[in-house]
Length: 288
Image 1 (cartoon, rainbow, N blue to C red):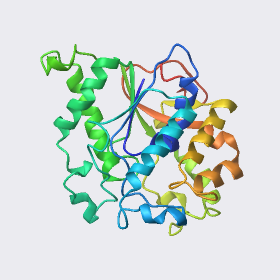
Image 2: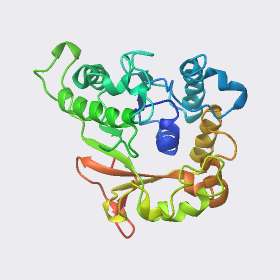
Image 3: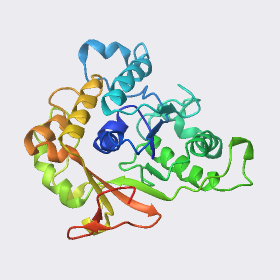
Image 4: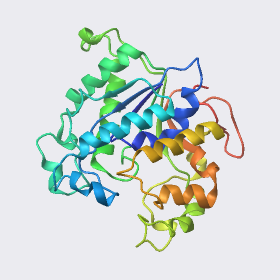
């Protein structure tokens, strides 16, 4: 299985329970590819504020170290930075001057970046790839670009005439995009109000949020067990600069229980949907 993410911590926040769940299976090999070091991230710890991009600009190196601790906590041992460590820089939020940095991932040539991912795909030969939807789940330029690069790599990796120097062609069987069901967003919306970093403080209701899909559009839900969920919490704790005590992820887990952290949802956009259960027939196994 291959997971393609934009920044350190995205693998944990969006798919940490899933990664921990499959990392514990001896029959599954996991690879995580991360596209940037997250240099433009917000520093949530006051005594580390000097690392920020507008200060010493050392946050990327610190997040690299956090990433190593977090992926180790999840049990993931095969990790790569797209094109090499620091090849692409965090672009920052949409519309900021950081989008125009000469190394910003947002400005990278898609086919060139995809070639670096094709090399990983052809070497690891994953059956399943997981990445973001075309809007990057919430509109961040690096998430959008990660989607573009991942989907282009899926196409190119399967073409035996394209860059045979990168290895034999490989056709990935299933591709998933991360998502959240609208019902879950609505259930969690009130809990966000207790977070110190509530990202929706100016939003009146969950109906106004620009992400999430109807429950019937979900194809899979991986519900991790307690051990995997504990690993996700440990990985979250490793990201001291990004996830401070009392932030929304902690609040969700504390108010709604570990089940809220354990369940991660996906849309299948390539491949055959396996057997499912429940009202909407969601898969419980991405390898089904």
